[in-house]
Image (cartoon, rainbow over all chains, first blue to last red; front, side, top):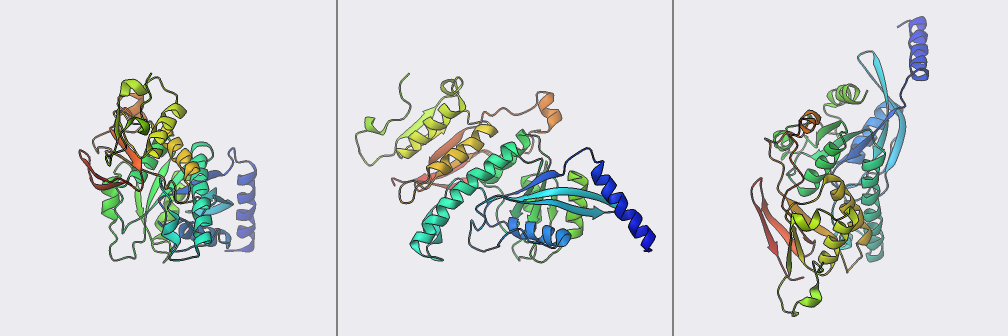
Length: 212
Length: 133
């Protein structure tokens, strides 16, 4: 690509942003604990901004505060879409600090459980008030028909928010994308492995199409 | 109106109190009144069964209030079960505009997380094991 063309494209992107009628849409990444939400948020942020959003862990409730990465500009098929990504704590109806005592000291486990409950409440508040669209992340090696998933999808639908379902962890042997497609046939399901970076082209195509 | 759930009324035996709450009793209650009634019952160790369940917004607030009341060694939260949505139901915006939306009427079982365990759930059956703390 010549220097002139690059310069023209660059100016075009800037003017597109300047004269865009809409602010970047806030896309909330939701799902149960340990579905891979932060791994996905980090993958998207690193691919398009070079920065990560937050720490990842196999211990549930690693993310205990909603975190926003602003102005993530995704370019697909010659077009550019800009979104804010909101990585949210995993939603649950129960938190037992004893879940964490194998991994940490008693006091740390209690602190983690307290922060986790605050994080879930915060995630619910964001969902009601502050997001324009949702990426719902599920671990495709787990049964998707749980009460939390059913309730959250119902809440998202009741607010008429556009939603994409991401069937994460397709690198695992027990993964079944079909199980998720069958559970939520009313929504588009996209398979991926955020950890391995598998199928990210389709992920970005769909983000641009749905939320652009 | 009598209180829906009151552990003090029981004789303190080893049983588990189950409150079956009709849609009629819920219909004129505000969201927070419903949530308070449910959580007060659950805090007392009761199983609360709602004939017509909660709306999605009320479910969202129930989760939020539940989280604020979790306390180590005292209250771990709730287990809540409803029938999963039938695939035949149309929940699209058009469907709702056309009046095809399934109502929020769906039998809902709520109990203390440490006392109720779901054994099986499908679109027509919820099977749960309830223990006494």
